[in-house]
Length: 105
Image 1 (cartoon, rainbow, N blue to C red):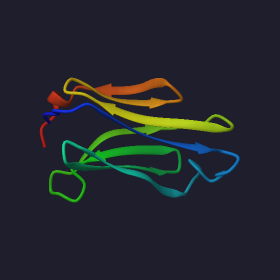
Image 2 (spheres, rainbow, N blue to C red; image 1 turned 90 degrees about the vertical axis):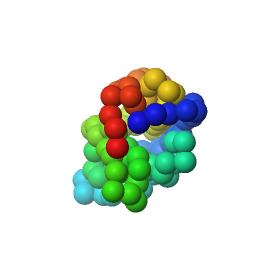
Image 3 (tube, rainbow, N blue to C red; image 1 turned 90 degrees about the horizontal axis):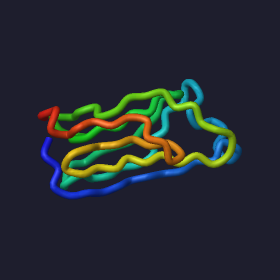
Image 4 (tube, one colour; image 1 turned 180 degrees about the vertical axis):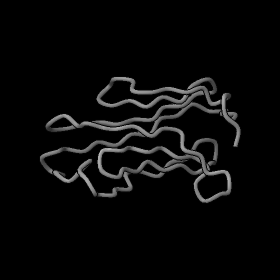
């Protein structure tokens, strides 16, 4: 996947205001986003966070799938991308990263 532009998408949630976040069996559609006009989505089912790109096409691709253990209180999750790397962060700490050139839709 060739990425031409840099960008970031993020969301936050508070475990006290949203106690069902990242609890089984809850499904949450957190945020829709675009990377170079390609639709993406961040969702969770229970503690599993998924980041997908090319949503709604035959080339839909799962970029990240990881377990999230939220801290008590406010939590921030971000996905940042550039031509050489896509990164997943939680509370400022990098959880995972991939090189977008390593996969093709």
